[in-house]
Structure formats: structure tokens, C-alpha cells
Image (cartoon, rainbow, N blue to C red):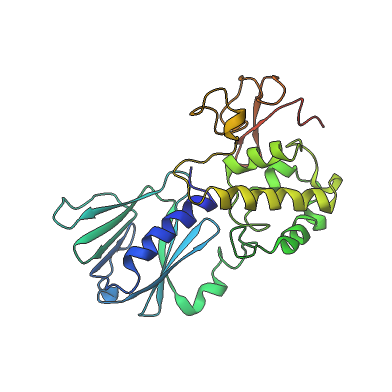
Length: 264
């Protein structure tokens, strides 16, 4: 599931391969081919939370949000042209294709700060360094006092990058119940949550698979890389209590937790 660490890993690879290259063709789902941008130089690829910004010399930026299912892949120009892709970029003999992304669009680079989605983002937890003080200030706004912390961690307006997997894993590591009201948590507790999220995502930037459970704590070396996510009904690796799952927030996203380790 693409979250902040996934977007940063993809952006790093893409930037290494396309920065400074000429864009021979750009096609976006819903817009079709955009001939006006042919011949532009790809100046940089910037990850911002769950968004990826591909900056072009023509004064335009391609904004891509992978959503829950988006994936990038490269193929040779001689291979059959993909159909139904969200983004298609021809760069020399290589075609970069993004499938099943939530959205992709072109935005005037000069207008990015005013963009409806980007302007509301909280601090990126994978920035160097992340502005944790700003994340805590946003989380402790009066309007958020009544929200459950498991729901608030997913709010990109507070801090950008946390998705469903990290939400559950961070709450478990910090021993916070996902239904705890944000207003009942101290600033230190909230800061600890965002600090842990930043640390876990940064640690996974160089890995092919997300891993949170230390090797010494796994029943087998290749098993149980996550503490609670996706493990409903299985024993907690700390106490043996069965991990539980429930749907949380307006989007009814799955939240996993240990009722003993994370007692309210």
C-alpha cells in the first residue's frame, strides 16, 4: 500500500533516471496526450507526503497521487503501448507508466503553493528534518480534540505521509489505543507518535518490504514483519492476546491493535 515511504522510494529512483532528460511524450488519464509539453526537460522529481511532483522546464508540474493501488513501472519503447494507464511518460527509449493511481494532473509550477490539495498539507514526516512541532500544533487544535487519534493520524492536513499501515504500527509501538480522543493525549504523547512514524518510514526507505518487527522477535526470520497490521485474530508478538480489527473514521479504514498492550 503506497504511503510516504513508498512515494519517496519511487521518487528517488525516478529522479535518478529521468532528471535532465527530455520528455518525448506525456499522456494523462482524462487529459490524453499533452503535445504542448513535448520537448520539455524533466528538472526534478519531488516527493511531498503521498504526492509526487514531476517538475518540467516548461513551467509545468505533473502531480501524481498513487492512492491505495497506484504503481510505477518502466518498459522499453518497443513494447506494446499500455492502455488505461494514469500516466505515460516517454523518455528516450524508456517509457515510464503509472497504473491505477488515484489521480494525476498538470499544474502550473508557479501555482503549486495555491493548489487546493498541496496548500493544505501538514509537514512532510520524511523531510530533513521533519517539523514535528508544527505537526503537534496542528494535532492539538481545538477542532481536533474530539477526534480519535487513529483517525487523526491519517489526516494529511496535520502531518503528511502516514497511511493505514503506519497508523496501526505506530499506535502499537507507542502503546496508544486507536480510539483515544486526541484532546485526552499530552503534547509529548502526540509528538512521540509523529516522531515514531517518521523514524519507521525513514528506516524503510532502503528496504524492498516494510519491516517493523526486529529479527530477534519474529517466530521465523522471514515472518511477521509487522506488529499488528493485517494480523487480526493472530497472537500479539508481545503478550499473546489476539490482535483485533475495526473500521475507523469516515472512510471506514481498517485499524489493527492489541487490546492488552494498547489498553485505554
